[in-house]
Length: 432
Ligand SMILES: Nc1nc2c(ncn2[C@@H]2O[C@H](COP(=O)(O)OP(=O)(O)OP(=O)(O)O)[C@@H](O)[C@H]2O)c(=O)[nH]1
Ligand SMILES: [Mg+2]
Image (cartoon, rainbow, N blue to C red; front, side, top):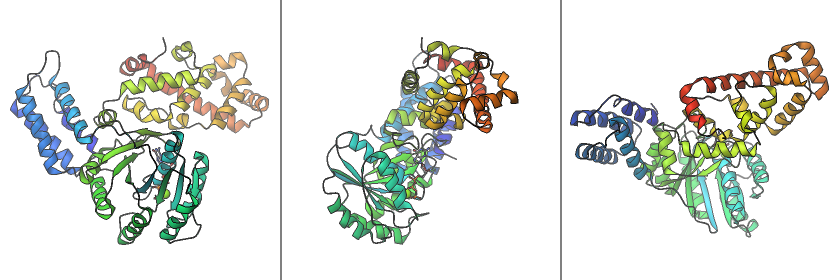
């Protein structure tokens, strides 16, 4: 069981409780301990945390109008925030960063995101290709460096990381931030440890950051302590928080290596990197969506996409509003995870439309008659599809593909409009 799930299960036990007596809080704590310990969170830490909760719950009086569940959830929230550390402030000066982690955790993508992050803030950055195991790792990093507009150094086919670092240092002399991508593994084996030690000795990184995937459960603690034993970690980055994982493993990693989370990855694109914010992170872990930032992001996305307020509020989705909404959704990409925590599952496809596809959809929609734009069902007829395809210079298959996306979006739209709870949440950020 994922840690977040365990925590939420413990909280659910409190539903309906009106008072917190010793029995209620002990049962809650037992569940909490089980969840935390099975996620490899340090046992002493767990005991200290539950003791604090028990003391506070029994000593303090629950303020009127607050349910026992909300009260304890809030206490747990605050305890976890203090456990997870405050928000992170990166040091803005020249430095060297070594990224470490198991297969597919997101090291390579994150290295490019970080380089872009520092360079945008005035520190020219470059990536060094030291994943000497995976075929095409060099090309992947080179492409990402280009996309990020940052420097790059690698020696194709070279397996000696010491040599790569030596040459990188002189080739990238003028760069302020150097970020080294490393090989992944299924597990940390002696060969990788050896390679990492060589890297540390030669590269002399200021930061040794473990990259973990938000889906990683309790093994994250073990991973972190193994990497920590090998090279002494300085921080953690949690990736793929836009997916289904809630990052519970990060708590174990942080507890095992006694370091803090620095950044979180919220998407595949290079700008999907956020500074770690304890409140947001723990809120998400406990299944409490961070409405504040959701609202801000959605408002910004709506503004960016120039969606007119009435378009967001019309009852039925039509093709004339589809395009602008799609554009807004596209900008909200990283929010899909948070939207699902509100109970809305946006179709992944709708959130990942490429700019090209958007352009194509625009010209398809432009080729419709005004009536077709309002009454979407009309264009299911094949003679209309043919005409629209010809008029917009696309294939019938592409028109059908758009119709399929439209129908998916329409379904989601209905869901949003009909679910009272969701509607209530969404009404907060509908433009007035
Ligand atoms: N949704 C999402 N995908 C991500 C994120 N970070 C990385 N990915 C994707 O995860 C996959 C693996 O990412 P990589 O950066 O190649 O991971 P890696 O750790 O370098 O992998 P190896 O080199 O094979 O060990 C790629 O498809 C990335 O686009 C993220 O924050 N969110
Ligand atoms: Mg990689």
